[in-house]
Image 1 (cartoon, protein in one colour):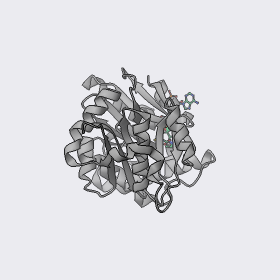
Image 2 (cartoon, helix red, strand yellow):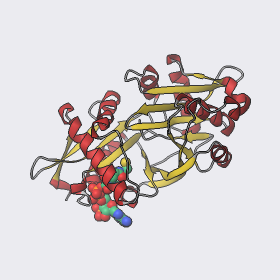
Image 3 (cartoon, protein in one colour):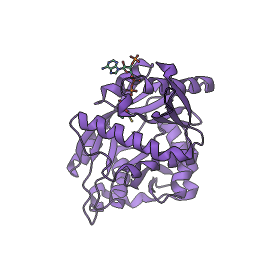
Length: 312
Ligand SMILES: CC(C)(COP(=O)(O)OP(=O)(O)OC[C@H]1O[C@@H](n2cnc3c(N)ncnc32)[C@H](O)[C@@H]1OP(=O)(O)O)[C@@H](O)C(=O)NCCC(=O)NCCS
């Protein structure tokens, strides 16, 4: 029952407990569904989630405490932004699966968004009916489909020529780029989150990298972030005007992850880009859905979400 749990902001001394919830719930859920092996770096690597989300959104890391015994039963992280509220990494401890923890956490975030008058956005697995149903029952609608794809990046990187002449317009992101990145995302996907890009480019925790692609006139036509951490090695977020530009920034960020196997989330609607990525040897690992509760603009261009930081 909803009132079996007290919802409150996480305390810093609870991060190891939250890491345990994230680790156990993901490992158990995927293990039970035939895909074991998540978080190979162990439970301690998962403290990065509350650490980064508290950096970004103090007070928006939510814990669900079992009223009967004071134990933490679940956690989630929400991200209030200029245009929307997003929700990332929702977990119930396996001992509490099916007891309403996630529904109660989700209601908490939706109530916050309603008070702010903003839509709620998230990316959820199409292969996880527990989370798909959780969100659709709460009024979310699936709006876009994405391929999760895994790359095996050679130790020396992929040849830059794979992305043709567009590679010449790619460079590393600089602190002054955050405004133009936020403006481009607003134009192509209807959301704005400038502070996220400042945080990523500033890179105090030493785990992010970002590339931009410029037009002939020196304007930013696309960008892509990547995160390299034992708990998460993936590309995104990023938006690009064209699939050709997308291929170039993807190649740049893959090569920043040379010798590794990062994951990226690619719009299924961008068939030419998906075909290019198959040509580079990438393989499908899962399918994700962009879901929104409330209005969401149709995407123009290529929009690549991420799970960390998940603020899309
Ligand atoms: C997904 C997850 C968070 C759900 O947590 P939970 O606390 O067990 O979920 P709840 O008990 O609150 O149930 C959610 C709702 O989904 C409903 N539901 C689940 N499967 C369903 C199905 N196949 N069809 C319809 N409804 C379904 C439940 O009935 C419940 O709705 P109700 O309260 O109206 O009956 C949990 O399984 C988990 O932590 N999994 C591993 C991590 C993960 O996948 N997280 C999500 C993405 S990051």
